Image 1 (cartoon, rainbow, N blue to C red):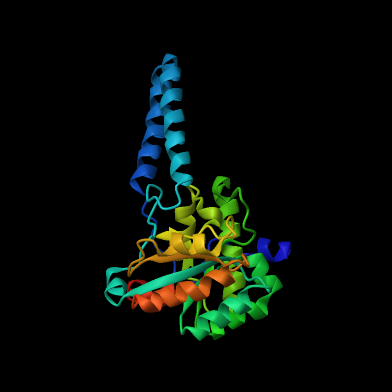
Image 2: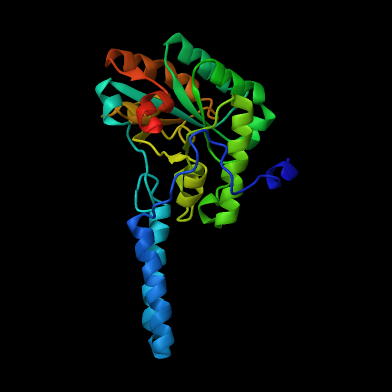
Length: 280
């Protein structure tokens, strides 16, 4: 499998929409300008190094805080809610991270079928390669398969650009070959985002997604508490985060899907909700 990852052409996207031009976020522009100005200042006057060091340290602290802010936009575009058109159709999106998981994912699919709901599954490439039949079943039942990196390393946000590219593109190739369509969306492991991730996603034609609200179903075993977190303030256009690696989700889903029906909200995949924007 390692050899397969290393064989990827890191300059070629396999997403059907083709690479997008990278437009650095304002925070990245400021950081680049600060580094350039610091180099010029040090060249002109070496004795300014304490001031330069302080400014650069502050800049890196800001970037670190941005990386550890899952719903922030300082490092680039971040989909935290569905487009207004989807909101107008009273759509919400259920997203499931960290699968596929043989003990949980099939039951999640059955529950979604029972309530005629669709969802998006952010799959780990390594797990998908181990359980391709589950990925195919997700796609077969009308849900979208999205990119959650290949190995799901907790240190993902601190990777350099080459390693980020390998993680993203290895998962993209694996998921595309199994599901039959390239993922259009990416979510970082634990939601922590590297300042160097955005150009990698642009090359792979992937859009970054976080969430509107999350249930913390990987740390809580109380279905009622998880349900309250997900439904407090729930509205059309929300993106909900759950995990099909957490068995407790099977106790949460029936009540959550029932609540969506009671509020006249329709659960759709990200692909369906954002289809018009993806085509643009």
